[in-house]
Each structure stands twice: as structure tokens, then as C-alpha cells.
Image (cartoon, rainbow, N blue to C red):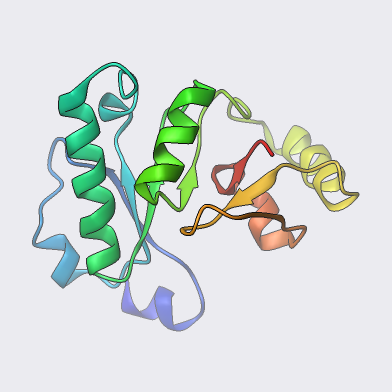
Length: 144
């Protein structure tokens, strides 16, 4: 993992907060991002417990200088709440389903032509980001 990071690859801990994810990974692995599992996002707007867990996980990620990415975002109200919590990135069917390679290439081309969504930043400000490395990760976008 260190060799991958040293050549510029960015690494994430997927499904953080469920299954086999461990707090020890935050110290052990040279990662850039925590991906918060969709189980906490699906009822985020209505469930106070999920809100508390998500906010705590976002704060935890930032305490370790990691980005926080929320998986399974399907609701604009959840995007707004995640932005208020300081979440750095979101991904979900609200923006795009998983794409086969040929469709991803078309999506990247549209993105780079300016037919893009806005990138959510930790401070809640949005800006267009047309860089190819960002475009490939649909998880980096939220609607403006």
C-alpha cells in the first residue's frame, strides 16, 4: 500500500463503520479517504442516530487528515445535511449509477466540456472542477 501511495495512487477505506473496518486501520494504512457506508446514509435525514454517527465519522476522518466520502447518496436533502456536517465528497444514484467503461469515457468527455456537476468542498463552497483525475471519480461530484 505504501508503494501505491508513493507513486501517486490515492487509497480509501471502503464501507467504514461496518463489517471488518477497524479504527486501527486509521493508523496502519496510508489512506487518503474514509468511505462512510450507505447504511448510515439511507435514512440520514430522518434518523437522529444516523446523523450522529455520520457527523462523528466525518469528524474522525478530518481528525486524521482524511477526506470523508458518503456512499449511497440518493436524496438532495441528504446532500445538504452532509454538506452541513462537513462531508468532503458524496457518491450515489442521485448523480450516476455505476458505468461501464465506454459510458464512463462519454461521461468524462461531457464533464470536461463543462457539462459538469460541482465539487463539494469541506467548507461547503462549490466550484467546477474539470480535471480528468476528478472526473473519473463520480463520487467527487454533487449537483450545483
